[in-house]
Image (cartoon, rainbow, N blue to C red; front, side, top):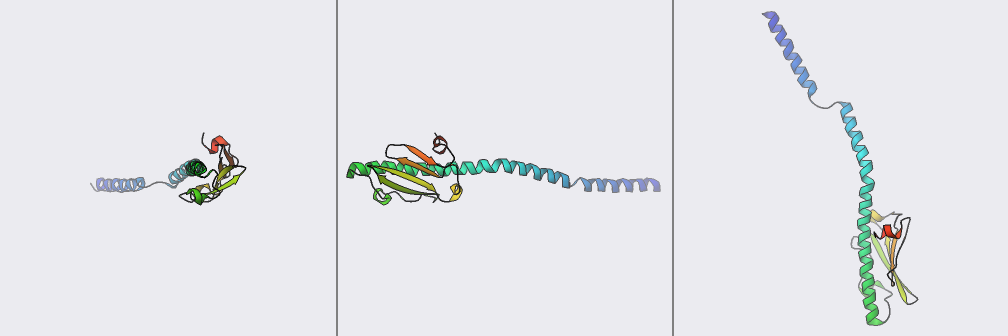
Length: 152
């Protein structure tokens, strides 16, 4: 009887130790999870920053097209293009401050240029500037093509 009692006590102790061991994660399991998360982050971060840059460029394109429309209206009213953005009621920076806008009037035409200034487009070497002239020709500076920067 005493021996049975001793066996049942051993079983209880072993059961408790098994239950105790099955709680939690091992260091190897945690390291595997950290490695997987690291791999996913290295794949996702460039895509995320590219998405932010494309979104900011869309705002610059909208600002440029709006300014071009207002330039043409100014030309209809005054028979010349405006040499200052204030004359056509266009701000010199985009709504979120990511781009600065400038206008150059020369040879009877104009060129509007949006230059990356801050936010996700700061340091963007693909599409540093976006430009639009009075003929509707879209250009850019940087390593990206016009189609890539203007999302055609």
